[in-house]
Length: 142
Ligand code: HEM
Image 1 (cartoon, protein in one colour):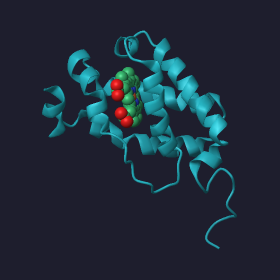
Image 2 (image 1 turned 60 degrees about the vertical axis):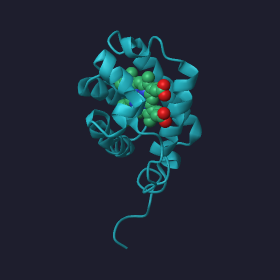
Image 3 (image 1 turned 45 degrees about the vertical axis):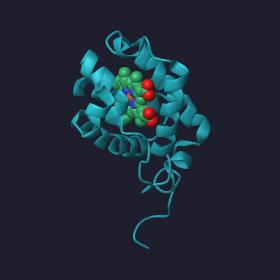
């Protein structure tokens, strides 16, 4: 045996480890409250359809907390955010702020450190995807 017996906090799908779908829903809810309460981020959000946004984000968060090793098959996050990047100057710092709120939401809802770290590691690569110009940009802008 290489290490100790698996415990709820260090093995298996993140969803189970974090406490199931209920906890994830609460994380998303709190995350949204934090985003919308931020006087700077609100300029990217005030005119968005929140129902649509939540539906999209829920898919993403389900993936985020899903089984390890599952590839992301959702829409390009660059394309999803291209309008706010190009027209409203959404920046890497704004992305970091969003990640910070997500981490805070998990923390406030009692997610263990190890899980928060793992989720943050899974989110981080999307930062490059957001801000690296891609072939799809022009099609989307046209
Ligand atoms: C979708 C804004 C942070 C991942 C969206 C959309 C908006 C938005 C407006 C909807 C696009 C549409 O109409 O379809 C923001 C703002 C953020 C933020 C203001 C502030 C920090 C993040 C972060 C991530 C993320 C940190 C993940 C790393 C996504 C995903 C979608 C989405 C996966 C849905 C893509 C799709 O399937 O269409 N976001 N976002 N967002 N966002 Fe964000």
